[in-house]
Length: 313
Image (cartoon, rainbow, N blue to C red; front, side, top):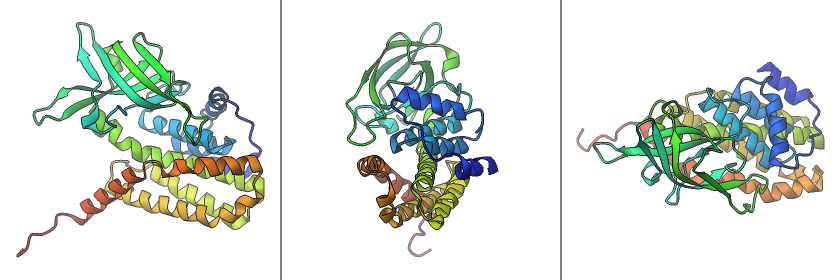
């Protein structure tokens, strides 16, 4: 941990201008040999970013490094889950069908973050239903240039417009047996990804804020608080993402990050105008999936409380 803390405290806080996703990716990959831990990579990538959008992108890819350590670190990856009816397991209609030599993928994905720039796609698909009628999901890793994959870039979002999104059409995409990842696609990969993503994206946010605070002359106490939050979030990023205890602790950590952002609001007057304007536009990113986080916390609290005893017990 000392290496990344030293990086955050001593690395030059003057970021290189990142004028494209390709430029951001080259800078991000440079950090991979130095920071083997995905949490440290998220912090360092956020610190190196010149805007929140590219800090988010570093956190997003660091989350993939945590959940899919077997994937090549030098290829940008996109997780493809959301369809026209959403990303819930029951909404997944993309089909993984067996063939004589492997499998084929057929279906559509409605919203893929960094989908148009990814070299490797992680596609959530259904291989049918179990005895209870529930979708049996698998995760498939395929080259983004595979025949039958058609990516169409979507219009820019009103915030973090630098981060592209795409929709995918999958037309009988050939899949070899070794490209189907082991284990249940929902419980092993899709379900924990939200927790993993929350941890690593907020680590990248904290890394970016530390760079910004040093560059803009924010007071030592607020920078030290940001550093302490980074250490706390780093610990959570390495905890079991399926544990209800992790979910409860993460909710408290995210609440503390939010309070620190509110307390530091007056300090943005010291930040350069371009960065301040982008922050006003992009900070809505932090509220995305707020309802999902609230449901995750509610479920965790209920599990910790245990079953409600019946009257008369």
